[in-house]
Amino acid sequence: MSVENAPVVDVDEAAIPVEKKMYYRFESNDKKEFRVSELAIQQSETLNRLVEAMGYTSEDVENKPAIAIENIDGKTLKLVFQWCEHHKGEAIPVDDGSVPKIVEIPEFDAKLMDIDNGLLFKLIWAADYLNIVQLLNVSCKKVANMAQGKTPAQLRRVYLLPSDEEDEAAKRAAQEAQDPRAREVEEEFEERKRQGGNSFF
Amino acid sequence: MSHHFRENEEVYQGFILSQVILETPCWEAYKLACKIRREDINYRDFEFIYMKFAAGYTELDVEVPKWTEQDATLDKMPDPILRKILNSVGLKTRFITRKVSKHFEVLVDSTERCCSYVSISMCAPQYFKLEIDNYCIKYDIKSNTVTLQRCEKDVNKHSIKDPLVVFLNDLKIVFKALKIRTFSIYVVNGYEEEHIPLLLSTLQQIRDNTKRDFKANALHICFGKMAAVLPLVKMMRTPFLKNIGISVQTGETTIIPEIFLTDQWRNLKKFESQNSVDPSILLRSFAHLETFEVTSALNSQQALQLIRILAASTTFRSCMIRLDRPDMMISELAEALNVRLESDETSKFMKLDDTDGALLISVEYFNHIDDVSLDIKRKRSLG
Image 1 (spheres, rainbow over the protein chains, first blue to last red):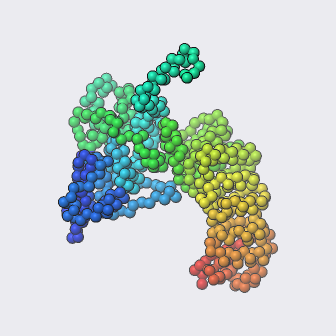
Image 2 (cartoon, rainbow over the protein chains, first blue to last red):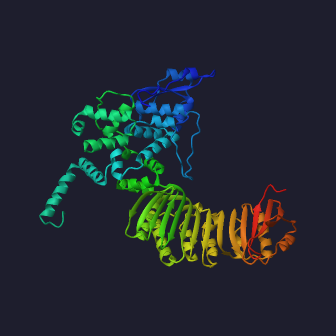
């Protein structure tokens, strides 16, 4: 499913039973607003605690500004809330680490995560930040599945991972950027070594 | 084609669109594109165009946004997330990921992997074998090859110089962060003088390097020599080990008293040994276990005493004791217990009622009168 064509996460009025459901409004860091059901929010431990602490009534939700989620952009948040709405009411898995965990990716999740790596990693960040256990499980599993059958070089290419040499070069560059004198000192040292000096000091 | 493909962006994007329509997976389409263009294409750029088409866009004018430091990448992920991902990868991928960079090597080595079953077999002069869940790595000594099998199908096979060296080196890599439900070690008779010390020193090295005991719920050891059992038992993390099974070919009886003296014993729930256990130790220390299966030279008075102890135990559930010297007759025991002796086609049995619950005691004769086992089970529902 494309991100662009994905249904907007909003209240489905027809689906509301006689009893009125509670919804909350959230805003991404690029000012996109979402309406999410109370039941869907329960999938996120972070958001659940947040709304509980706020104690909003239905009127508050409409009258007060949307709850800002400053670390997550609209595109990612849309995926997160789509996932939460689809899985609302489902039990949240508990990982006690005692048994090898087998994570199956449901069809809906697989389609939702048919996205580029950049967005997939943002989704993982968001699931971790918002503490959505099962979304984190399936998104990590998706990355793990993508790694299957690839060589170390291919993994570096797919996941834009630096090799040890690149890592070292990047660290050196960062160090030099922090301390421009470091490079000069290093060059001076090399020069003295060439001239036969035993010690820099 | 390759010239246009390389120079003409529309032709290139047209190719990607065609692959999306043909439902070629992104990675396969990318490899094909690299092959046709005869160059390494940036995967991120390719993937961006592919995903744009997969999302329904059909114009061949996709503009790939420039790379920025804010873009999310795998190496920017916090280590707990990377560990979670590594926990989800298969065993083979786990060790391939280790070769990506030093950072990943450290990560993989420090990421605990839960396994249901791990087995080390040293069966010289034929082979050494390492089994982890569905995977089996076999180091063939005669052909000097190593074969990786998954679900009994060959995945990979290549030549090696020295199977023993490669096997021990692989152990050092594999065993760095495993959490094992059942850990089995088999060393067949004939080469144990040479191989057991090597295996022990390798495991000791791993333990020293990681500064951690091995985590195994159940440890099953099948050795030619009893002396090597204790060092292995001591390498296991104490509260974690709940079940020990020992099968050794020599008749030494000293090892079980030695295991009693370790901290492991207090946490054990299950103990199995084909080797003889001194009746006094059986009476003194086995009642706290949930279940055990041992050989012992109990006489009828000792058996009676053991039954009384087990009946009073709050943890005991079941045991089977093969009798070394079955000088105890079932009728004699039944009489001493003052219980009714019953029988069916295969065994004679009796029921012992106790205030905390009931014990079902049966005596089974196997091949002849000297091959007797005493089975005791807690049957709380017995009336």
